[in-house]
Image (cartoon, rainbow, N blue to C red):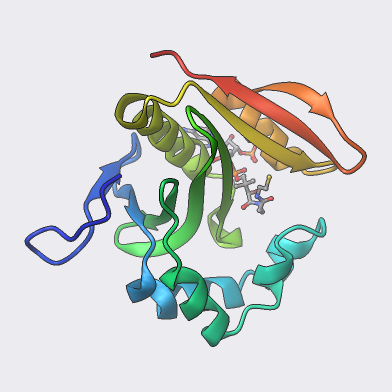
Length: 172
Ligand SMILES: CC(C)(COP(=O)(O)OP(=O)(O)OC[C@H]1O[C@@H](n2cnc3c(N)ncnc32)[C@H](O)[C@@H]1OP(=O)(O)O)[C@@H](O)C(=O)NCCC(=O)NCCS
């Protein structure tokens, strides 16, 4: 996804199959909204020991984090009717093979928004970046994340002490 501003001054949006749900590059301009989202999701994000940095987030950490250039990967906010409700990343580990990570505001879990966001981003990755595979590491016990990946067509490919690695083969 191009992160350069549109003539209206905002980065372009990637639509999803859900009306009102779009992806948009998460930039330094989103620091206040992203901090507020993180601040009300500290417990939600850290239940399984993941997202350690986010659990300890301060406004200064968020500003510095969002000032980093994610390229050549993609760092996107998930927006519902203009409000930031989550985040999804595509990590350029070994292009055309990519890693991914995602999370939703706790009050928006259970409505299919993560599925729609992932489908949109991985479709875009295949079309625009030539991505052929997407990998995700899921901590043991994260049943919601496993269910999400299964719905998207991911398969487990390796098991480690703390997590399982899943893979999605993208159809060109
Ligand atoms: C992982 C996470 C993003 C999954 O969110 P989610 O909302 O469960 O995922 P989905 O978007 O696939 O939604 C599935 C739910 O929406 C329901 N749903 C409603 N409409 C739907 C639709 N059109 N398509 C798919 N699911 C739909 C499903 O029935 C399911 O409900 P259920 O949980 O009652 O079975 C979320 O739990 C989260 O943010 N967890 C904390 C962070 C985290 O662990 N991230 C992953 C690290 S690997």
